[in-house]
Image 1: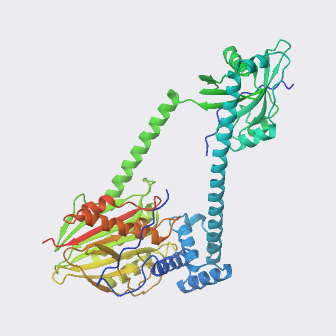
Image 2: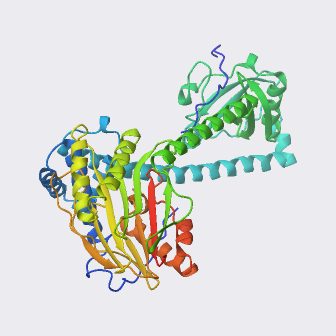
Image 3: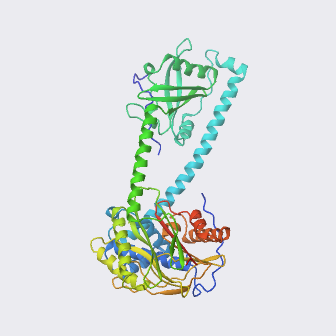
Length: 537
């Protein structure tokens, strides 16, 4: 028998369904009849956005990026809209420094990322099902051994010298442990002539089982536990479980620089032993320090966000309009995003509303966001036409993109005239506004307009719709409806249902009810929401 002494060391740290709702009834007189955004129109949105991101990241013309996208979809025999959405998931918010540089490389990477994601999800699902089944089988086996130990005749036979218990196949036990989380081992005992336990030898080990010399998993098989590192009390407990079959929970016990809980169960003639690290004073102190650090980072991020994009706590009363705003940061709250809004009265008695989104996160996205927002405010002194304002913002974004080829942004701008009860609006590759009228919500038909920063001298068309007392308008960024694991239709329909429910629940004050109910669909993306209702003097 080897004289190597090994004892388990601290293990390495282990590595809802979406409800689908029926489409709401269309809003009458909202706009010309056409396909719903989220079906045909959402495909156009995805295609425009993917082409813009490809062109911006590769520094090529949009027409060239569009041709590559269509050719790639044809060669792979896949739907061009699906490929466009894969491109968006890969490039939007990603790390430009580590992304492919050419359009064909980006398209191939998008395909490969999707294949890898599907394989990983399938593997995780199978592993989870296998793990649950294995744990249930192991629990049943241990329970059977415990029940056997409780029978007097069996107990008498087991302590009779020379009688051997039936041993499970090591390969079968190893197969079980391969699918189990945590640090667990199956060890067989060696006894002297008097029946005293002299050694415990690893017969199978979970992948996370590790010893001080760095060996883990299957490399431990055949090595004994180091007897001199185990107290007499614990060794006696091991022998007692082997002799009687009665399980034992030991600890917390000091092993190395940490305290451990040790659970011991008999399995055949061996022991199934699990080690779990117990939370000690040092762990509590470290956890408290982490919590303090996160709280400080969260507060810093909040201060920075309020400086760049102050969100009013109360609704804004503008000419003939009440506006309420809400900003939902991404899950990583220390990462400032590029979502922005604007709501202000103009000198001619109209009100200008806008929501925009700069691709990506971090200080660069926040800087561009601030520049676009302040530029819109300054330009609105010269013109209040939404299409012309977007043309100017597009030119600014193109100039800013000279040093950052991957720069792209979206925006929607509307001008409300309370005297006419009319909303004139335009968009640049942005999700369409939602209008609730008579208790039913639908997206407005989008006028044409590419993303900002991808086509120089682009033109943006205006659309006109009535906006009267009792209506509710919702402008938002894509974090409210987009999610990498579900289609735009699902996200949009969920928001439409939420708007309908909020207006129905509080017809007199729907804005507060609406903002309280809305939740971001994508935890990895910021969300900016602007809700407006006519009728305020």
